[in-house]
Amino acid sequence: MRFSSCFGQYPLAGGYDVTKAIEILRAEMPNFHGSDDEPKNWKSQWEILDFLQQRLKPDVRSLETGCGYSTVVAAESGADHVTVTPSADEQVRVRSFCNKYDIDHANVTFAIGPSCEMLPKLDGELHLVYIDGAHGFPHPCVDWMYTEARLAIGGTMLVDDIRIPSCRMLHEFLMEEPNWTLDRFIGDTSIFTKLAHGNNSADWMHQGINRTYPDFRYLPKAQQWKRDARHAAEWVARATGLTKPIKRVLGIK
Image (cartoon, rainbow, N blue to C red; front, side, top):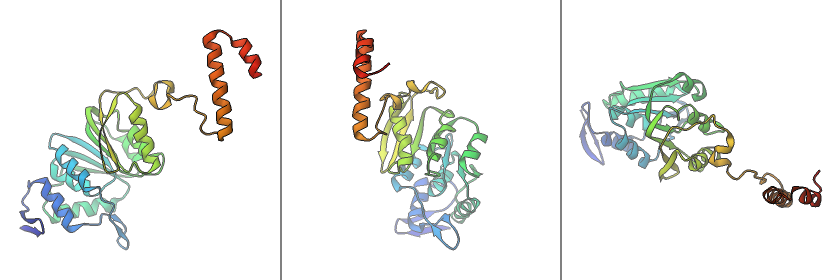
């Protein structure tokens, strides 16, 4: 059996190169999401699929929240891959597509259910995590919380759709943490490398994202200025030992 497209003809025997799986996806553009009456195509960026193709190998353990083209790429790679999705229909469609084109998906495990319920039940070290499931707050952060400790040092964490504020919150948190480093952007996906295990039970004041405490930006502008000025005066008072005089000036008891 051969597959013919604008990319040429490729033999579809088991073990063909994963880039050819991507080319099949490009040519066929299957709809894995939505309903049968209203199919949808929420595919990953092609550049992300290329990145996954380079990173996923038979000796890699990977996990994604969400399901789709990336799952097909993971299947062909031979990686020990887990896909967390609330939709059993997506599993059927992806496996049917793989069967149609003789893509071995034996190493792909589907965890069917919301990620906040399924991820706590999973264990084992991971080398790559792709957060691309539910995008509403707080789901991206929850997906990270239940996978970051499992990710090996040197492992890769992809945070998709950071143009969405609820996803960008996770991106901004990781940017401030010393045990994570930003590797690159691919479109609106940020890719981080884990440098060391973190201690997320540590007090909030040790987290980089909180370094601007106290942050009064939630207040109207005029009140922000007053609170910032008052805080600065209190800091000067403590630093100089003039606490009582400055408190009197500020009217603080």
